Image (cartoon, rainbow, N blue to C red; front, side):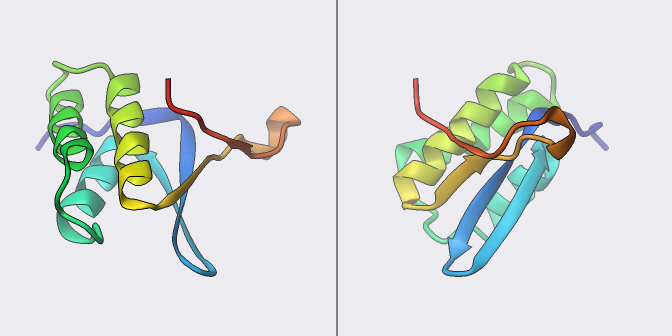
Length: 98
């Protein structure tokens, strides 16, 4: 089994009104994309799957896989925010695409 890798800052995705899910690692994100994603089409979705596989295989930087997941969320209309740890003294911030 491939060893999981974690994002430096977890992501919160708003899946349905009132339902938010936190993603803190590549494996849990890939599992969600492959098994629970609401719209399994689109270039950003396909790229996110490929980048997550690459990150788990250590051929793609973890930050690239995270950004690909953010792009897939935007493509599917899934709200996404960065979950800054409370001990950092910061609040959640909206993520923008580069």
